[in-house]
Image (tube, rainbow, N blue to C red; front, side, top):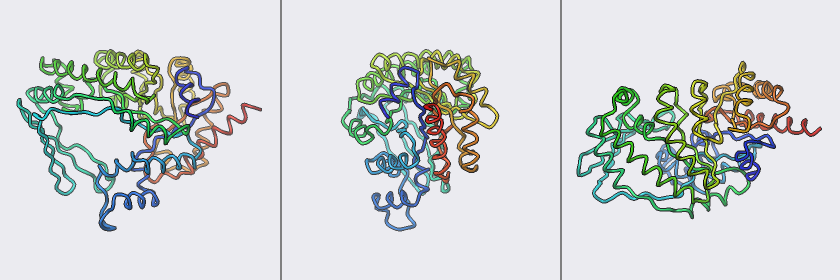
Length: 389
């Protein structure tokens, strides 16, 4: 299955239907057997204590967590998708950068001290979803860019391919195990400063910020070269998942040139590049996404009234980009298996002459019935069988 899928992405001509749902750690943690396994391995001291977010993600990426996820995908008839999970290099920061973290309750404060200034960020873990979110951005002023630049320049990278190969060996032919690619510097700073602050700043970027962007770009290029030499094959840049925050003009100016350069490095090594639409309407950004040279765009929403529009996009991207479409997380969580079947058939009936990559418009919501995911697989298998008759 893995070889067939990789060939489909490289050739842009799928010869089979594939279903690749995006399931991350919180979806599995809502399952009793996974939660029990997590607690037993992480050695929680009591039934009232829950492993920290860091330990939960560590388990999710561990061989035990990976095998659980593979078994789950097999049970619903899906192809495994390891999302931004492979690691193929290590980062080392010069000792002149001092990092200190302090956690009290759900709140963690992290301070970076450098010879040219200090930075602080604060995060909290939701008591409901157990997801971490930032409450204080790392960068706040122009001066902070100097400290951030110092940290970037003080950081070096080295290949570490052995762990990536071990994970690939566990997955085998059951699916693909990919790594995070690289967002462009503008995107990184959008989050380091916060969208409101940085988008206002972007009207007239200070010279120290543009200098920082060039440093970040050079570091990204170095990491791209390391990943291109790794055994990993699929890289997700994660630049499109919230693209609606910015204008198409900003995307063309500050995203496309960088993403194209990163993709060229990966493509020269025979790798596959993707991005994630995260269920958004990306229509205003199609030309920019196409110019980036992506092989796959994941996370296009299949809704109850847009199958014809998706067929137009499939036609537009034929032989250029493989789109991955699927129901929204809300639809999969709330609707019945019969309604999921009807939704899938609304697209399959309009595309009898082609093979589809289907997934989920975004990460599957905790509590989503596995049978709803299995229904997508079943409809694709049925369409495959009908096509052979």
